[in-house]
Length: 301
Image 1 (cartoon, one colour):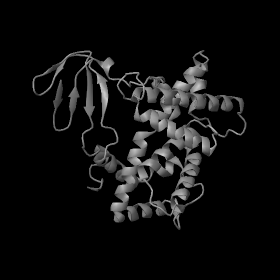
Image 2: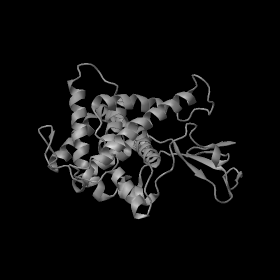
Image 3: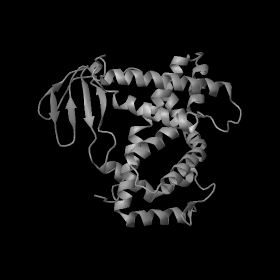
Image 4: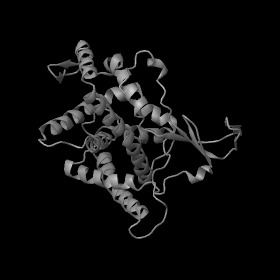
C-alpha cells in the first residue's frame, strides 16, 4: 500500500522487508559510539587531515585540462576522506583507486533483488563486498601493527577503545563490518550534497563572491588560498552565511529521499487509513526551509 501526499510518502510493509539485499552493512555502532566519532573534539582533530585531502583533490581538478564529472569526483573525494581521515588507513593511491571502483560496484548493487544467479546484481554486489573486506582487513592489520606517528584518534581507534571499555575485544569481522558501515554512511549523501553545492555556486556567482567575502573577513581566505591554521571548528561555526547557503542547498536538493521507520503504535493518516504496529514506513524529505535560517536563507532556485 502506498499513500502519497504533497510532502510525505508512506509505504507499508513488514519492516524486515526493507533491508539491503547485499548483506554486510550491519547496524553495528550504538549511538554513543557515533557521538564520540563526531564529537566536537574529534571533528577538530580531523580538520587538518580533511584540509590536506581537499587541497590535493582541488589541485588535481585544476590541473586537469579537460572537464570533470563533478559527482564522480566528489564520490572519490568522500571515499578518500573516509579511508584516509575517518579511518586513518595508509593505503597507496593506486590501491585506493582500485578499492573505490570496487566500492562503487558494491553500492550500485546493494539494493539488488536477493537472487544469487550468475551475472545478477546480487552476485556482483557479493563479490565486490568480499573484495572490499579483503582490502579492509589488510588495512586494519597494518594499522593495528603500526601505531607510531598518530596525532589524533580516528573513528576506528574510537571503535576499538569503546569495545575495550565494555570488556569486549572486537573481532576482525566486526571491525570490517563497522568500517564498511562508516564508509557507507559517509559516502553517497555527502557526495550528492557537495555536487549540488558546487552546481549552485557556479550558477550564482553573486552568492559565491559573498561567501568569499565572509571567508576573507574571518581570516580564512587570502589571495584565493586558505590561510594556514585558520580552519578551526569555532571559526567554521561562525560562518553564518555559509551555513545558510548549505542549508538552502540541502532544502532544495535533499540528498536523502527519506528515512525508514518502524511503526510502534497504530495511527491514522488524514485519509483515514490506519497504519498498524510493525509496518515499515518510508518518510520522504519535505522541501521546507530550515527553521533556524528561515529569514536568512537564500533562494537559489
